[in-house]
Image (cartoon, rainbow, N blue to C red; front, top):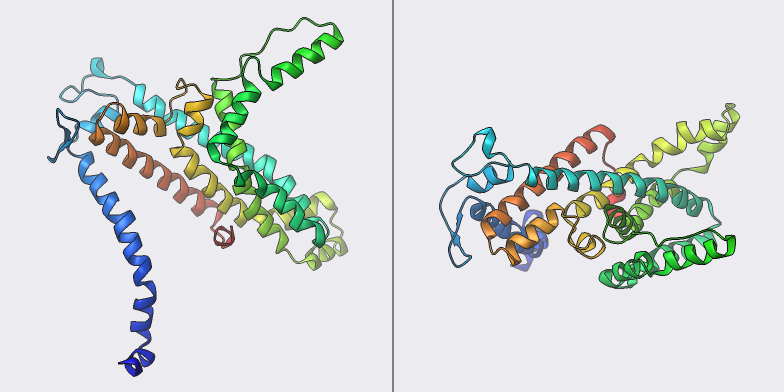
Length: 305
């Protein structure tokens, strides 16, 4: 038996992937299939699922009432939530790229002995609990918080009247929290791409008469693009489903699709509508990711990150 196992490469491969396949089927495929089935069901009076085939939950998400597809029955609330989530994810990803790229470039060009220290400093915030970091931003942004206190002190020195700014429980506070939480997930893959660039390419560009800006556009930026793509996926997908940041920094006033799903399962006790919203979120994320990777390619750096 052992001799057959040593000689049978296909059986060896099957045994190697068996634990992962059990994990994927049990914790991903089966729950996803149950969510798909529940999304076509109906809510029972006690908050359970009546397994029938109905498109009512998807019709509600499109803004219509089940059984009424007339314009007078249209309500754009859920479409606005979906659009707000997509917009916030896009804004977060763009800001994270703009902040992460210069820092990643600086770390990649730093002396080799200092790179480990810089990367350590980037990862230090991740050692603190996610919720604690969000609460820290609440202390900074609240009316009597650190930022307003500093601005008030500065205004007093300059003799300028100052009224505390309302920064907490706003869309801007949610955006700041999202950018802060996901910034390291963009820094690491971009750094990985930049660190792999052969220095001789810069020497060749200089020999051909390219200045620093032209070298960046023709050499550095194209070769770092796979890292940006990987970082975008690592940031965009979690932001689309995030609800903790918007709950705490948005004060339950900035409702995203993640909040909608959470409240349907926990507050409204409507798992069928929550399942439909979850699948719509997944489809939106997959479509955006598909077209983005088709446009810019997909590199191996996501594995390294």
